Image (cartoon, rainbow, N blue to C red):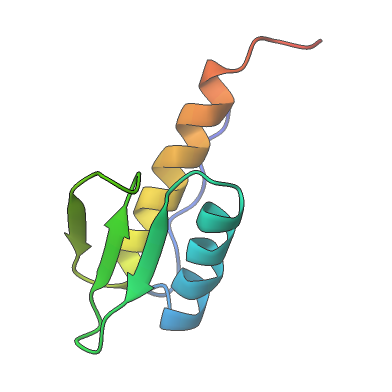
Length: 78
């Protein structure tokens, strides 16, 4: 697999929000909420601890990590 080129800009709050919506909708996390401070509060399951992510880049990185994990854990279908 070829590595992706580095981003030309930092992720925006809108991009992070879109990715958070997908994570919650697909039940990959229980909740992801943007705090007034610009931090993201993420909870993997209803009774789990709340993680504080410092900004949009951290939320996008979390989404990429989850995506990578789900893709590598799937059995090959080819």
